[in-house]
Length: 238
Image (cartoon, rainbow, N blue to C red; front, side, top):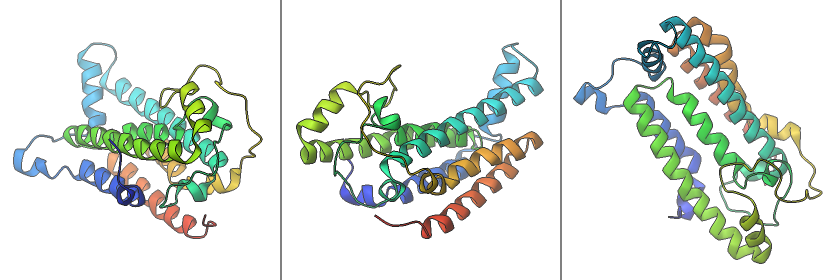
């Protein structure tokens, strides 16, 4: 279950297409499935279960979304700081050595974990059928990307990576570091700049979310994406 080199090279474009389909949900026009956003649907479920008022449930889900979006942005920024943003956004596979520092002492794939958590947050703004499509699509595609990366690293680095892989979990972080830290120093500035989009989404939910208008948050997401593309154009390449 490995992604091809072409899939890996265009992984961000493929993810963007999956997200776009999730937001647009073109099948809705033919099947008339959804008329509300997932955020509203979840709030209605909580209200009908008698746990809290609809207004309270809406606020609770918004707060949860902000928290999860923040964790996703932190994970990606933390991972990028140690792996280097230029490598994170590169179109090719890299394997100059095993990085055992930062989040990589707890989990092998913090960047993919951060992206998946980010997907759960964006799904709140999608129609329910689009949210399901997006979560499943992104999850399966990321598993293919992980398969390609880990096969490449196993072949390239041999026993060093196999030993690391045997001790550090893939996607569910360990409760404590599984290996001693290496001497890699983090590059925080380039990591933060490289993940401007992720932090922009956090800001969009935190600022516009209290208007309870999904459309405003989506506009913030689009602006964040545009800003990140401009910023990344000026970041050093691998």
